[in-house]
Image (cartoon, rainbow, N blue to C red; front, side, top):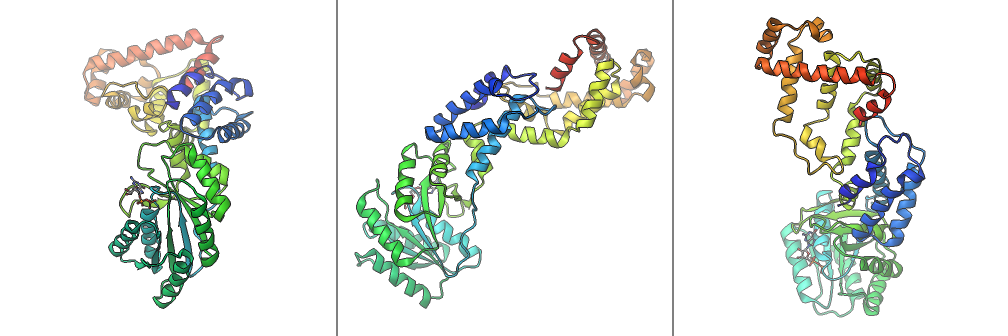
Length: 434
Ligand code: GDP
């Protein structure tokens, strides 16, 4: 997965303070490969990488995250921005006329019913119009869905003239007080000129406020040609991505979006009619990158780690006067970010690493031990004799050996810090912050 590959590409970046073209080259190459693997069109991938590169260059790396994590965040934000360009809102024209187009099997009929349901919830009285004259089964399917959702339905099973059906539906809507019309047009396995002519004619006749292309999110590279052909023929105003509940990476969505420039308005996330929602670019971006939750890790780090506090700590480390109080404070900062195993999962290359089941519990015990000490004891652990240690163990509800262990660890840390004082301290601090 991209996560693991980025992990190795970014290892070289550790300790880099500022992102430059040279130090990012490997990471960006991995991202490009991952995009191609997720079925993103190569031109789109190339443009995207350029975009990320210019957003990265010259950025200072936040102290509390690694450069790698920061790059992933930038990539994700750029990807979200690209996917989310334009509005997900529909035209507010009433009566609202929506024309649904797309290939056979894309989920067009299902999405027509889903959108009808959503509009009903928003206070419209929708009329679903069956315009697929070639497949009686498609008409039946739409009729069943309309009945199920309590939506109006119009069809003319004998007509062979799609634009006449469209016109008659407009009249029927007026008569039935429907203020939203959803035209479910015919699909084909492939784009052909007959289909294109037919939907062009229908478009002219019904003058829709929106022309929505329904595209299967799992479709590969050919999705781009399909989208372009529909866009050229009927000027799309929006995209509906379906089947985002499957395990497809959704890279085609990025290509379609980039090549048509048309906003993605809705996402279908299941077979049922309620599995439909306004499009969330950030979710799809995470999925295309397949990178777990690095982004939320960086966001959480930005939120929870107090930069001033981090600098104060760094200063203490530099002077090697780090006491148990500081140790406690550091631990509490870490805890604020969430359970340890969860945090680890978010880090590229670390998702497979298992912490002992009791890592969080361990941390709480350590915390309890330090909290059972007096202020003086925390600052000068060397005064902790046997009876003090016993008192602390009782207070924290642990065995005395645990207190001893903690103190031993802490002594080792102090020793290391004294050794590092001077020459190597800078390097060590960086490591501690990463
Ligand atoms: P059409 O030929 O484009 O009208 O496609 P349909 O609406 O008949 O859908 C084709 C198949 O895809 C059906 O089995 C639908 O239940 C299924 N489908 C549609 N949208 C989704 C979706 O968002 N998720 C999943 N899992 N299946 C969907």
